[in-house]
Each structure stands twice: as structure tokens, then as C-alpha cells.
Image (cartoon, rainbow, N blue to C red; front, side, top):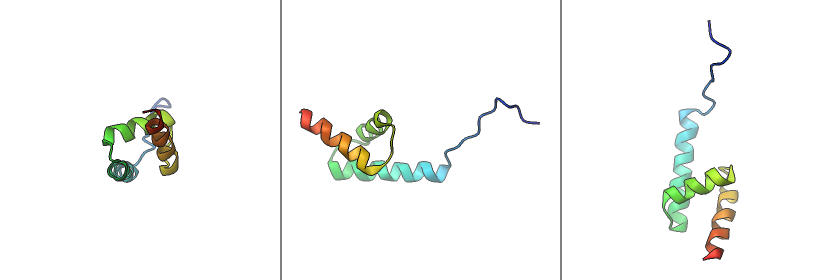
Length: 63
């Protein structure tokens, strides 16, 4: 019998691998490290490519 307090993992390994491919693609395209892309995704709360690129451009504009 399962406890009601048990959390189920909603992120599948396939989705996690797809996200990592997306991180590597964006990092290479914009010539930044993958860690920067992951940080932008975490702060923006979105893994959508356009949202991440918008945030990246905002950061570059500040420099």
C-alpha cells in the first residue's frame, strides 16, 4: 500500500535528456556555458527556447 505523502516523479528520463540536448544546443548557439543556460531556465521558470533566448538577450544587453 502506498502512502499518500509519496511523491511521484513527474519528469521522465526521456524528457530530462531532451532538456539537456536543448541546453547544449542553446549554449553552443549563443557561445555561453551550459551552466548559464540552466541558470536562466531556473530563474525564468521555463524551458521554452524563446523564453530562454529572450532572457539571455536581456542579460547580454546589460553588459
